[in-house]
Image (cartoon, rainbow, N blue to C red):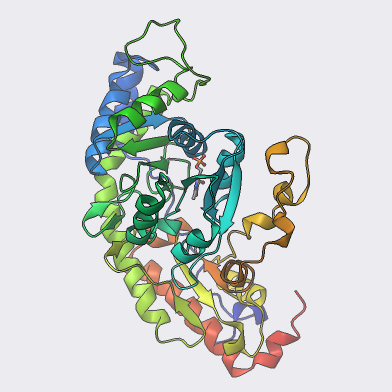
Length: 411
Ligand SMILES: Cc1ncc(COP(=O)(O)O)c(C=O)c1O
């Protein structure tokens, strides 16, 4: 192996692509053809019923409701939990934009909490500081599939009588102390968008153990209809947010493959963690006690001072040249243009001073430390994972050996 970094003309560690995602299987093809030929394509489809039964069972929940996206599933859950115009909803400041936009779409005000730097998940202490008389829901996100600190969050929920909607968009099959995430609170949402561990291109679901909550969700996702009402009888301002039967057909076989993928992802994550634990300057993320991640995305922390001030972007460039794409992921959401402009379009948060927020862990993680691999990096063979490890080792040791060479690098 050429020991020079590829960024300086050496041989890259990896030139092959990583496994393709989503994976097309015969079971998926057969399931789709069967639905097209023998089933309804929308309302009344047995594929949708079967998906809901199987997904609820897999997630240890009483109920599942198939939705057309994770974003809409959050909006529906907020409405069904009783959030009204002007209410506040506490969410992490480090998450995908949809967690926040669903709150805005519900005419409510997102209140951003800080995260725990070691897990990347919402910090319960920060939640506690932000609770006001207007707080009407809290959305913990199981970031990258790693369960948030739900025992402390449920304790806050009970003490303040505030419902919890879990954003488990990335956490299919993840669990906390033998319970699957998603129905630990009032309800939880999942996404089946292309990159997710279960994919239908687009799609979402809400799970819950609460019958009246899921019935209200049903109304919001189905034009305001009620379960046993007339077809043209509408009780609330809902919309058509239903999942297509074809998406359900694509997802059903993946409920079985998720289980084997879960172990594969876990094995590869452990190999990466073990390797990173031997490299000063890269820190694997921690899991909460009793937490079992779905390992949707592998994340770790880049500690700049261990690399004599060499910036994370330089590290990304060097990794990319070695054939392993790493990237920074999300920004602190309160810095998104959506929240820094005082738009007339969103009067319900026009008086909120998002510009004044500074959550130090979120900013440290998002702006300096977070290193993300792609989700398909965790479904490879041992050789694939070893290539990732070798690329990390090669880049880390080269920077440590001669940091000055990297400090002056013109990107
Ligand atoms: C944490 C999180 N929440 C919500 C969503 C929204 O899901 P969707 O893209 O299906 O609307 C996503 C998906 O990208 C996500 O990663």
